[in-house]
Length: 128
Image (tube, one colour):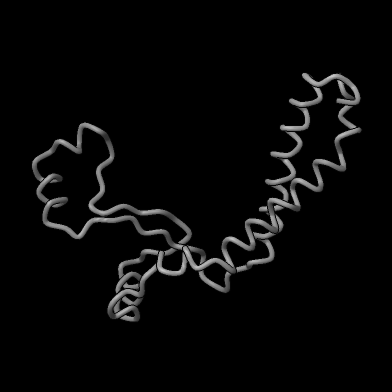
């Protein structure tokens, strides 16, 4: 069994490497640039959501059904076929805090690296 403390440097390097690889994939490569489209009459949609009392943060589906059995209801099926249908993700009002999200990403990467290092420490012989 390898002591876990021998793997701390590897954990940190792996977490930072994944963070920077993720950064490069999201910010430099163009493969996600067209994932999101602008709504027609964006201001009107936002105003309508405010008027109806829909606010974030939250995830909403429309048309909505609460159970698997409700998906078979003819009225729900009719609403799905009539469209539009979709999912709406709303963030909290105010500016988006990219720094907090980036720190959370690094913490998640460190947690995953720790779990992998812990597993490796259990199965690898010292010096392997």
